[in-house]
Amino acid sequence: MQSVDLAIIGAGPAGLSAAIYGSRGGLKTMIFESNMIGGQIVLTNEVENYPGFEDTLSGFDLVEKMRLQALKFGAEIKDTTVLSINISDTIKEIITSEGNFQAKTIIVATGASPRKLEVPGEYRLIGRGVSYCATCDGALYRGKKVAVVGGGDSAVEEAVFLTKFAAKVYLIHRREELRAVYSIRQQAQKNEKLEFILNTVVQEINGEKQVQSLSLFNKKTNQSSELTLDGVFIYVGIVPNNELIKDLLDIDHQGFVITNENMETNIQGLYVAGDLRKKTLRQVVTATSDGAIAGFWAEKYIQENT
Image (cartoon, rainbow, N blue to C red; front, top):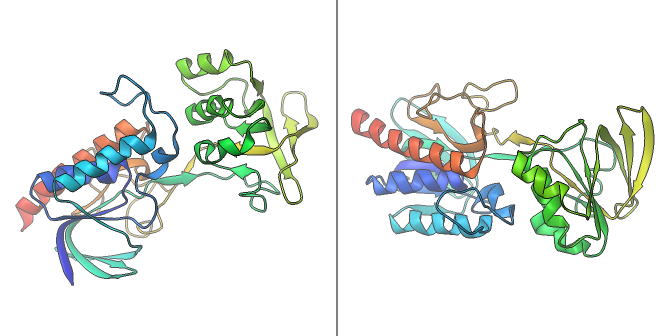
C-alpha cells in the first residue's frame, strides 16, 4: 500500500493551492481527482478579480498555472475516484477505484456543484437546452434566444458572456433586485441584448426533444406567462460535494463542513478547504487561501505528531 504525508482530495484551486504549500514544505503530496482538474472555475470564461493579473484570463488558464506550480514542487496528481476514507488515530486510509493509500493527513477539497431548479422538464432536457455552464455551451446558441436563471455574480456574468453569441438573453430572477455586485450589475444593465425579468420564477421547462419555452410565474402580479426560447442556463447556487465526509465531520444545515480558521475539522489531521467549507465568500481567491492555510497546518500537524 502506497503511503504519503499529505493526501488531497480534489484538484480545484483549493486543492492545488494546498498541494503547492504541502509539497513546497517537503511533504510527499498526492492529489486525487477523477474529474476535470480545476473544478468549477474552469467553466468560467473570464476571471478579472484574481490578484496579480491586470488583464482578464480564463479559469482554465489560471488553474493550469496552479497545476504546473504544484507539479514543479513535487506534488503528484492521481487520476482516480476516491470511494471512501477510513480514519484511525495516526494513519488515515483513502480507498480508491485503483487501490488503497495511506496518509498522515488529508485535505478534502471536493468543492460544490450547481444547484438544480427542481422543476418539471429540467432533468429530462439536460444537454438538450438545459445547461449549467455558459462557457461550455454558449457557442451553441449563436443567433438564438436563451435565458439565464439567477441573480448572483455568476448568473449575471454568464448572462453578459452569452450576449456574445445569442441574439437575445433574458435574465430571470425571483427577487426585485439582482444580488450581483455593483460593477457586474452595471455592466449587465448597459448591455442592449439583455432583458431583465424580475420577481419571477420558472415553474416548468417545456419541450419534447429540445427546450422550447419556459413557464413563468410573476410573484408580484400573480400572473403566469410562457417565454419562447432555445435554451436555459441555470445559476441558482451550489450544493456541497460532501458524500465522502458527511457522516464523519460536523456539517451545517446545508451540508457545508464546519471548520475553524485553520481549516481544521472535528477530526485531527483531517482538513477541509474551498467551497465545501462553511464560509461567507466563495471565490477563487478564498479557495486558494483556504488551501494554503490547510497545507500549512497539515505540515505542522505532521511535525508535531510523527
